Image (tube, rainbow, N blue to C red):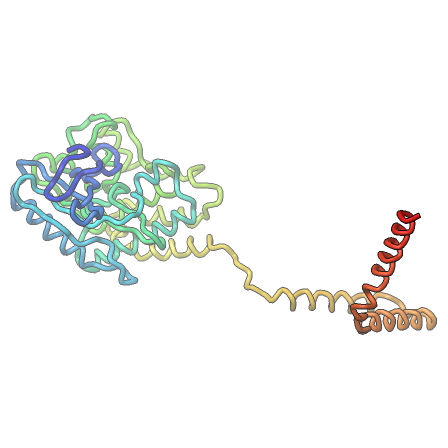
Length: 369
């Protein structure tokens, strides 16, 4: 699929930015030819069974009905579907930037990382409360929306189905998917190749959330390796070293967030989502700018002058009587000058007019004689 191709009533403009193999199926940004609106199109292989496409559409409808704690929908409803080749699903796509493209520029600031991570965690908790497991949380299927909200794109297939044999290089498509898998899922990756993948659980979603949160704050993945076997060992046993990875302005509370979401114990991790949300709220509160409440500038200036006059009267010794009388006389003169009425206009203009007439008379006499 390339730019300019037509799928149903949509014209493809390009694929979404992602790492190789980060998404199980390619996602394309396209434009509705009739409505002139932007949509997200997910294309299925030509040999994909109809039942798989129908199951993906049904799952997308379930996800579109889920809301987070604040009643916001994290998934857009389907606007088009086709079960016959070329099979595809299409969602409405807002104008927000994709998280993967944003991270390719630079890591988010601590404030942005806390706000975006909190929105992601709330959306994930809404899914889990509805009995739904996402199974494919990646920066490539997260959209940044206005007001600190996020939009999740629904992947059609779950599981590490694109993982290949051990010792495959990191640059291959499969290991970018493995970077977001929990220890339990990466242990069962070989079983997925034979067609019996382990089902995804809420604990796997929390692990993927922890990896994304780490990437938000640092711009890097928490575990890197050159081969699939090395990746498997790193996820299983490598300690999470945070020294020097967090920005200098990031609070230490981020470390507790990573420790809770990337706990290798699946039972503790499954119950850690509420704790992660609470800690992210704490981080966000710590990073809020301390705004001083507005105060009337006139009242503030008057109060400052009154305090300064009081300090001077207390600190200065008593004035002699003659100095006090001179001060009172000066104040009286200034008050009278302020209260004196303005002179009439003719009094103001009589002097310049007289001078002008005298000058004219002198010039006329000189010219005449």
